[in-house]
Length: 499
Image (cartoon, rainbow, N blue to C red):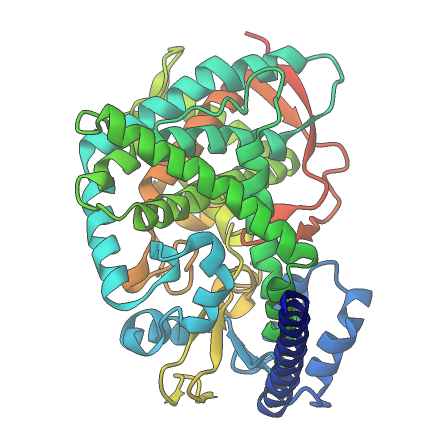
């Protein structure tokens, strides 16, 4: 009797597995059919064919450069990649329409939230509506406080003095190649971990140790971004369902990040958080949901790490090609600070208009976030008369905008800090022609903290060292990711300046 029951149970289990597998396969095929019918994967237009066959790679090293080429040749500064269901624009009027005038019609949208949901969860960069408003208000209060900004300034100063300077000094004059991009990623990861969690991972110690958390975070960011490159979301969703390939690696990487965050939250609850300045401690006073806390702080970790490192890497690559800009920055520092060896103060940095212009000009040409997408809630018409159907992805492209003659003039490809100055003083541009920090209601809350961090690094390094990039005339090649990352890093040689 028992053997018959066992046999029956095995038969039923096999039958159930077969039915479930068949259903999954049929559902996947049905979803693929719907996707094909909706996105017109058979589109034969020149742009879509170039995208599908990757023939654009014959003429361009980077996808962002191909998009820039297409946008330059568009009368409206807007193009449509039909197979992706994506309208891409470099038109400032359209950007203002999306980020300000019709803000409510262009949320991040569910498709975007799904892409980054496993990593960012319900964090501020991955939500809309009331959840976004709540986090935005809370973050605005925290990041706008003088005590928090002073805390961030102290963290950056300590990391520079105790780690960045000793590392650069250790290789100076030795013809030893150093990957400056890796250095800045380590530097900014140390800073943002201290600022967000109150934890020092020590990534920039002289031995340049391997950090399991940093590696897991890199992989999670990379594989999450790769989801967006697929012509069909079905591809990565099936891989996630079956736990295969990059989706399996993504799951494993996120598990490391989750375990770290859970341990930090548990530890903080046990030790107390009322007298701490890190973001986790500050948010814990308002939020009791540990998963929600994890999502919020991991979002800030992503924003504060990669963007600063990307901005600094591009800046020093440009500086190596423009010694006249480097000299002008040194002259300004000498004029404002004299021969003082002290760290520059907030007030002194405010007086350095040329430095500010040089950083903004670098961000114009190489924004850390090259594009940003929203999804239309309802049918709409953009200011350039482009029709937007409900559910369409609409992308504005800061990287391309920085290279448009119609926006920046015939010298738009030149690195020219003077374009930001009038009578020696910095003059801001319209945010909708320079949406590097976004604009409107979603303008970056950490903008000032990030700029101060970058200025601290630039001031300290250019006063003490000559940074030279071998083969600096080679055009940058970017790796796929959420932020602009140079493929192969940025190899440099370091020389100490004579006193």
